[in-house]
Image 1 (tube, one colour):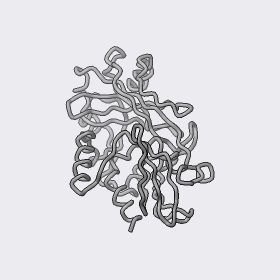
Image 2 (cartoon, rainbow, N blue to C red):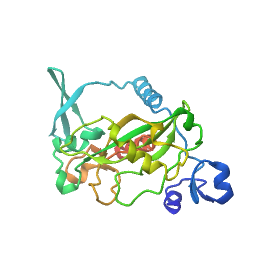
Image 3 (cartoon, helix red, strand yellow):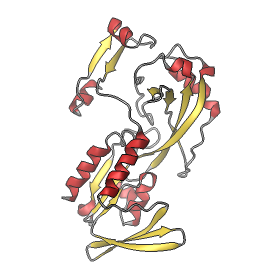
Length: 269
């Protein structure tokens, strides 16, 4: 993991163990850890508000609650049909950037991309979080991750402090079938979260955990399958010049969003 991180340009990675490990996180159970001093937390909602405000300042128009129903290629350009309530609007453009999250594979398909042939199919993987009792939250100072399991749907249940001084455990990984968008947190999962977290957080008890939030990852990796990375692809070689697909952008997509945007800008050029 350290070699992979360094090859990705992460600075300052080093192993800590023994007394140094205990001085950094005295309440954690572990033999050693890979320490990343550049890792931190952000207010994701404020970051998205900043992106939105910056885009609008540059003349971007945002249309909410709108569905792309068709993308037709016409004389080297694209006619995008967008449905908003009971109205439909056709937009003509030389460039289409498909960054539509959970439905990005279906949007690519509507433009003419063959999903199976290109292995672009998405698989929904739900991640649930439980919140730790505030009295126990202060016993952890940093984001703490167990060693991830091979072929799992995520990094495993880990501990994430927030800017308000709270602490969340999660997410787990539960593949959803038939593209069901289920955001409910199953209170019956408390025991599983506790059993996973107490291995490295011995100070918590099962009753310290309460259901919090859930999200869904748009994964290219099938359940039980090998790791699949993001797809960020200009589709000119497939006969769709000017169509850029961003598919399977899950965590750390938000963290990497400025770098992804710069990369897409480079593809446009």
